[in-house]
Length: 377
Image (cartoon, rainbow, N blue to C red; front, top):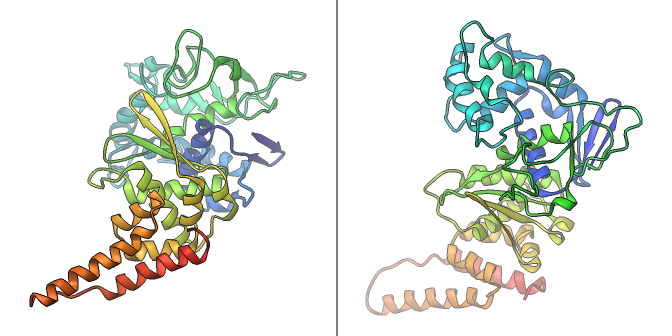
């Protein structure tokens, strides 16, 4: 949902695709200097953004030619570490725009039909592809206008934000066909019926073309996005996922990624998820043409959101202990302690010198007693 006042827009969490778009937009805007002065991730879960920040993003320019939104949108999409290599407009065209624009807007791209693919190919005596891209998407002017006001008296409602503020487009197989449902073109990103989703406004279109930026690719090639009932929570949790698990070489199950992310969020920010852990925090998993969802059981999410317990699990730092927690097998924490002690004393009896990590055993016992004390057992 969204609500607009004269100088700011207030957005409320909705479906996962809309939420991912808002989180992706936040990732782009956070690159702009002093951007945090212009938006507020509120405790009630909403996101308030001042129009001044969007105006700054589309008016201020990089290399005196490329608006900040266009620059950071493409740069954040790039999988290459090219930000340090881009020092002028030609670098940006060659290293970023030409590599990224096709993936986004060409035929079979993520957002095909949102932007004309023919304009991605530069021809002599015509505007460059980058120039056309800059002109095509604008805040109040261009072919794709973010704030495209609806005609006076128009009561058609956007099925994403539920607002009648902006001009709406009927969703069909031509518009963002890889993402949207249609009668003739069933898709793999949106699990719902055409009956429940008919129209989308200009603002929501703009938000949704950021959704890919909210996902993190993990070791098995799939992409994940943590969806929650709060934009503040989503933004922080997905930042942590990118920091901890982005790329290859860190083989963790989706279950463990969600569990460890909740632990790190509670531990690092000294923040108790409180009432948010009582609502649905889920992982949206994108594997090629398939979307899956995973969420931790309520009881487990509440436990991992406890600051003291999160800190103990993090300091122990053993996958086996985390598995016991995720499986709800808390008594096995004690089994682990007894096993370590038997191993130590058995080796000692055989004359083998082996140090026992007493601090870890103490923390494991403390973890079990804390879980039991707080009635999680």
